Length: 185
Image (cartoon, rainbow, N blue to C red; front, side, top):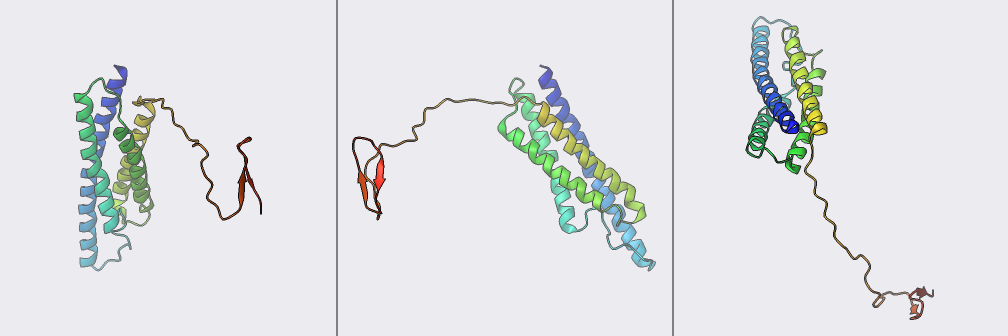
């Protein structure tokens, strides 16, 4: 029962942090856009990088990470509530491990942009990167602490086939008494 409470607790924390990161990402994008327009209007010198996710592709990746995993976490949370006694399935484990990779990449992407963004959104970049690394850590911790559903099947598999006929361009002589193939070149 402790395992179930731990699992549901992880999912609730992940859901809250993922929603917070999604909202914070949107606020950061809006602030970065306002700073860009202000600097362009006043003809001030502005930094080469205007956003914490480097480009439109980076922004799409972060939206995929935060919004996609908000949905995934909510579905996993509901499935664990519906099947209280069931252990984590292979799909849950796979999604947790992909979550570790995706949020680690997202955190690295945001932290590398910190020195290139305007000063006004530097704190936003640090907080967004920290939330990404926190999500990565939660996924990793949940993966380590969750009891996996394992099933071991014992099956007999025959790998050796009986010796029938050799098809070869090399002359081969077979002796029936020792079951060894002799080749002569």
